Image (cartoon, rainbow, N blue to C red; front, side, top):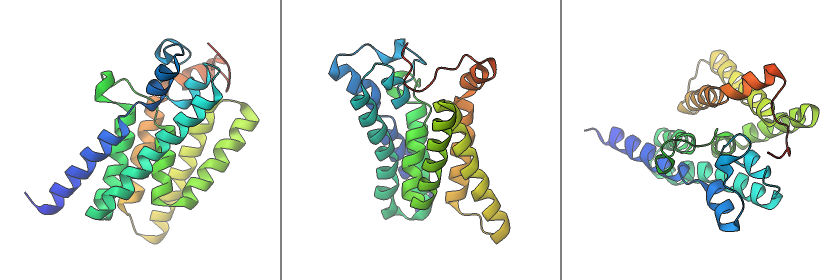
Length: 203
């Protein structure tokens, strides 16, 4: 087996293990709150942690879920750019489908942001601004995530077409966006029906 393939597979697996750590569930259990898998969206991410009423736990979950994506990329850089990008995708995949929770994970927004930090901090900044603007306007976390992820992916694809250069980073961003939208299917149905929960809404 070629060394490049081995390093890529190792990076992907390493990233997956990093991403599969369910910080939202661990933090809420340690704090003695209700099981976040039984409330709201039943998601293990920061938005659902916020529905417990614990803003501190939600902020910690957001930070840690992002950092596991950033750390996976940075650590895997020792294997090269391509493996590092695969480690980022692995972290995103691990968060969405953690083996420890029977592959029932989060929707990957925080980890997506963390991977963006490692790929290009300017992309992270742009995604954050778009997310915050949509959240302020509409108060829907899911709509903010869908909008910001689509905007970043479209920007990267447009750049690829204009320059003729398609890096592994662009492919990873597009793949993460596609999976993020796939994971948000129930949210899209509720948004269209007008029944989606707003940011900070409990239950």
